[in-house]
Image (tube, rainbow, N blue to C red; front, side, top):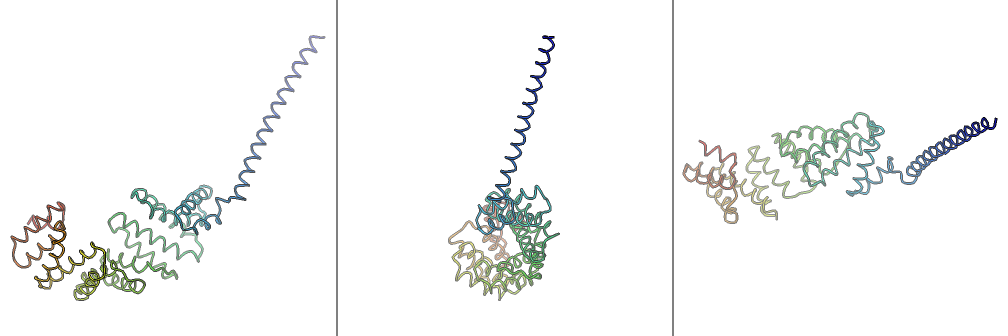
Length: 319
């Protein structure tokens, strides 16, 4: 009998021990869950890092740090709800702002791709009072993507979304300039001139004046183009822009048959910068017009020594 009670005592002790371990484990799990939810509650209550209010507050800072906070927070919100429209919108906005500030073109392109995807998705279910601004930001994103790529694959989309933004009541000082540059890139000179002229009413600057001159030149309105180029040369402190204006003036004078004035424009650059490939190419065209093929080819060879892949000079030399 004593041995039996001894075994029962051992089994009883084991059951008690297992029960205690189970209770301790259960208590630990409950405590962990309570701590987890408490931390989450406190974070949402006092720090509120993944909320619409947090997005607006950081966006209003207008700083890179603020945009980064918006980008990170909206990404977490989209992980939980991929169709959260406000998060989509702010993720698109912040992606664009980070793309503009990024010095690495590859990273900038990545941010822009995110911006475009998010903004296009946010258009599907956005509030009416947000529609025009989203369209504007989408147009800006496509414009910047064009700028980074050095091609103009997206100019039609820039035009589409910026015009939709205008139709829906959105206004921004940079829209006429962006439209002018985009119309120019697809060869619509009349609309480009109209947009640039509107941009002049907002704020005149030498780059804008030069772009207007180019469009008038493309539209075969050389006399008007010259007036804008003279203004750039007289007022601009940007040497590259002034040189480009002299080149374009020289081209206009060449087309008009005013060869002496054209040569003066080209030589005004070469006296200071003899290594300007575009000037040597343009001067070659001038000599070609005058019927001096020897001097023309000499200028094109100088052009190719400076810029071996200059398309215009290569085409002329290969003849």
